[in-house]
Image (cartoon, rainbow, N blue to C red; front, side, top):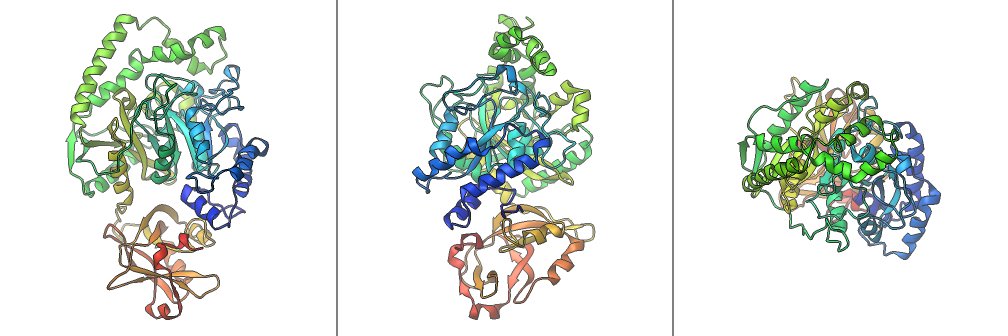
Length: 582
């Protein structure tokens, strides 16, 4: 927690609840964000960092806006290849920089929803890379383990969210840049269908494949942003109308038939994390089918082995030719390969015909289905990338590169850790215009209970908290002091009563009812078993630890209240959770 009691995991719901109760102001949030950005300066997150003189006009503007707007007062970061009027757009290259007079369409729509832009984030130069190290503004460090890569090219956007500098951030995604950094920094990364979000005001990488994306701490915030920015923009030639349907479960989930390849120094740990994720997937109420991944691998190979690298050259080649040696060395090497003459007109059409056949097969296979893959098959230290920048970067796109070529939508979501503080994630893919299927499948996966190891071999356990131990409340520091890690937000089964105990400070009590009751919001944390006894001793009567039944029918250890306390307590069940109490 910060000195202003603002959590690192900023979410739209948390901010709106605090603003609504007048316990926090947007000015205080911005003050804390500026402080955090200064503390984290060595992580190379920002190109134009948060500064009060730049943000104040947006704060002042809030007074003229309806505070019920969905993103009123919510701070967001912008990848520095997306235009923010009056702030330089560099695309990670100082000499390329220009000062836009207008906002990118997606930024304009977020401003209309009340959001506050706090700065422009670092990126792999010209959005060419998946590692986060290809920037003259410095290598962006991983948010959890600084010696490791952040992922790219939307490196600064992901780390800004993970470090609590913004509630959400805009990135872009051509080959996986909106998904790889999400996985490496324990975030949700959402990439809509091609054209669903306008790209007007975005420096193109491959204009026919580029998407604007969002990073957030939870899927709900990603969908909230999607609601604001989705829609056709008449002046954008790549824009189209793609409504998002109501979330539903897919007819089936696809998993790869053959064993996958993992890479890097944590290859074994990533393989095990994937196996664990597959076990969770098998427990979902969705049929599973196993398919040959080769179709998707062939599409992925086309992105860099095919003529699409020439499309990057078409976007920025003239600048590179006019400014030799200005671009980041490995970036210039890659860009110039697109202008080498290797890909003539005939090879372009040959690749387009091959891709058309792959799309036909993908469209037939993916009807009503969601494909699940690891977001990354491994990761690297920044030193390892420096010693072999091309091969390490290529590996990071192994399970992402196919997505835009096949015109799929995708959401990357956390799926536990491969090693301590080394996040692992999976990506859900569906056909264009099928965001509702990845939304439904993703929500189901995130709500599913993490598998509990047998007590004899486990050194961790799940603990449910519903009051002052939740994120953003005074006793969160107690959870952290005992070595606990937040896992997810969820709900109890619809069998509980919540009361407000007459203590100082007030605390909630959770009582399971034989009849009646409702579902109550809570958080699930992972706590070392060795710490649990000492933690439980600190819990004052009438509270205690028992089994709490969750909405999916599973049980975890958690806070419960003895029945006698009900007589002197206020029934607050109707609020649905402690966060909604004013």
